[in-house]
Length: 307
Image (cartoon, rainbow, N blue to C red; front, side, top):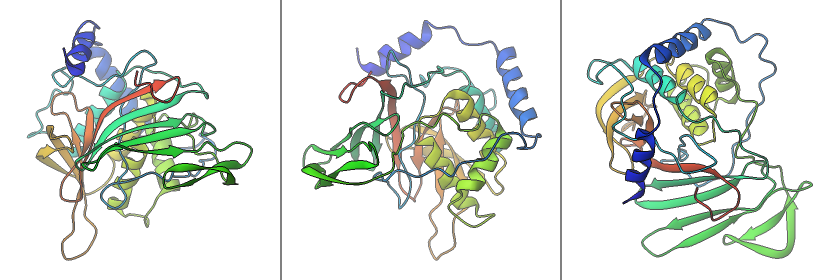
């Protein structure tokens, strides 16, 4: 039996929250959107890790994680109650927020790693990133030319091993700042997340396309369910979003897309985030700007483990 069928069976053996609970959760999130960001504390500007990206700046996106096993939301689980053809972008993103709240809430330990398996373009990619950024991680890619791997040196006491051609140079170090795979202080409410997105904004104020890339950047990080839900709720307030009723992510999975306004130019390519049409679980990226897909994410104890 393949992995997806095993995961689906595991999911079917676990009861889902009732619709009343989901509605209540959604109501709480919507109420949070009307509050101010006061009292949330200073918002720290995130240092974006130097990772391989697709579509000129799109990072691989992430889902939920569990200490025990790789988890992905089974595509035939019921979630959103509105058909994609009738839904507007905000309703889809709020449906994604409600789905995020049903995911396992696991707080990684500093000594662990975030494992991600994804597809970027045609290539399969696996990565193990240190939770606190101090331990050596690894990226493994599987292009047509054959398997390749690259070390991600951890940063300890302000120094990291120097890397050349993806391999550590023995005895040589360089200055560094830790690049953790998990930030424990990310906002857990929509208002705080909007303030955080404004703080790390990669574009000018009001640049919705840049805001979409910032959302995608955070989806590439390990987010616990409250922060993940807050991110989708904050994204729902972006002006100019449109629904793409038939979208496909980088793994060929069909879903409903949310298109961010395109930048100027003769042939602008929109950023399209693809969601499962039933559960509104985030799948990956589609559209002319490039494709990617998240296949699995887990928190593991060491490099090489996948669940």
